[in-house]
Length: 94
Image (cartoon, rainbow, N blue to C red; front, side):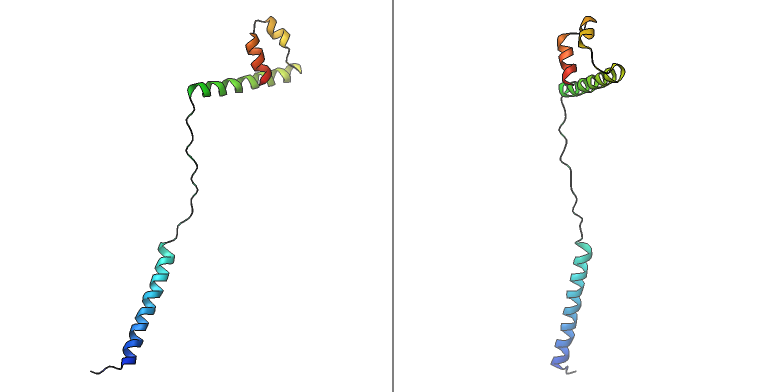
């Protein structure tokens, strides 16, 4: 049972190639990963911030409704109706 040394080395080089091919194929299959972008965690807003944002939104809506209905905001009329100067200043900023 003498084997040709070249035959043995040819056999093992074939096995080596198969192993190398398998490693490349398995690396290509199992190492695939999609780069996923993760959004930063949103900061929780405090109750004060939420109220301020809601108030600003309501003031903008009220101002837009007045402008649409009358063409402008009549601050003098609002003042006569009893609205505070602080409210009118915020309405003007909105």
